[in-house]
Length: 238
Image (cartoon, rainbow, N blue to C red; front, side, top):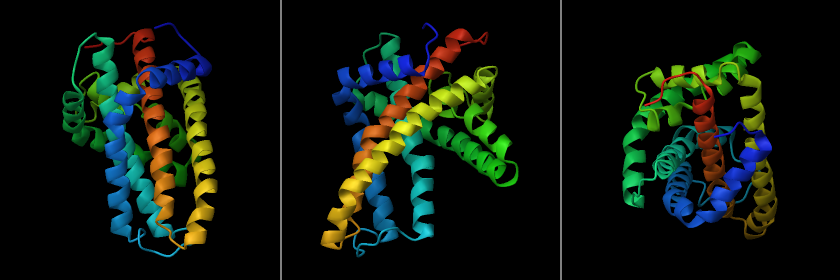
């Protein structure tokens, strides 16, 4: 893969989504719906009256669920799909889902370490937290594509990003800015509906819509970028 900037990577991601959107959403939408609905049920938000903002505890749990479960699981599934697709292998959606679910426990360990260290860095020393958040971001891809295990996925991600940190951070900001924009728009659309119906659960539709649109987008972009890093780095690949 030729080295490309954030704009070209964005274009490739959108093109892949456009051409294979049925497959992408078939693989990821059930995950998004199940995790979001279960989380909101557990927090009791589905039956709660409308309020502009949820309690900080509920917001934190919702954030942790997204970072530790939804996005890593979507990423593991789509990373497997992209890897098999790139190798010219024909695999069914069931096989891709099974492979992603099988890899998820290993992915979860790496993502949990990444999140704890990065948040710790933000709390105590701002720059190390930012540095770790970018350097260790590609744990799921390292597990699924390069079959790294234990803490090896963290080392793999850091090694690939080394020397490309600023570029990687810039690419990440572009993709996450799209998610923030979609969250803002969907929230603005559904908040009046939730207020008029006095049902906080209406906002669940907004969250599911935003997650279904942006999490696959971020996962595909990160995986394509990871593959690009592999091709330009002097590191062994499986």
